[in-house]
Amino acid sequence: MSNTTKMTSVEQVIASMTNRFNPDACQKIKANYQWRISGEKGKDFCVAVNQGAFEIIDGVVTDPSVTFETDADTYLRLVNNELKGMTAILTRKLQVRGNIYLAGKMDHIFK
Image (cartoon, rainbow, N blue to C red; front, side):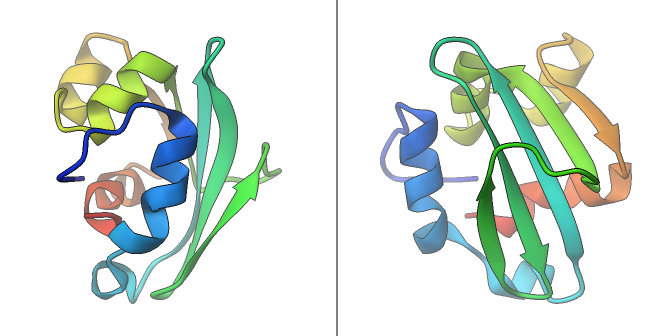
């Protein structure tokens, strides 16, 4: 996810998703990407992608395709390209459960 403006809160990231969405990258994807962001500045939300469209669902969905768990600081570092996803996983700052193929697509869904 590349941005010109540094994101400073989870809410700011969510608000920017419409402008950063890349529908061409997910024409064949139908998946629920659950984010569980811990800490005082954290939030639980789901990015529901459906073949070139998406919606944000507040809270936790019952059957996500992929669940990402991290803290707010790590999430913001990921979004701001200050930390690579694989590095976050290997250092246990990001836990990923579910469909790994779909998890890998997350980097391309938003610019």
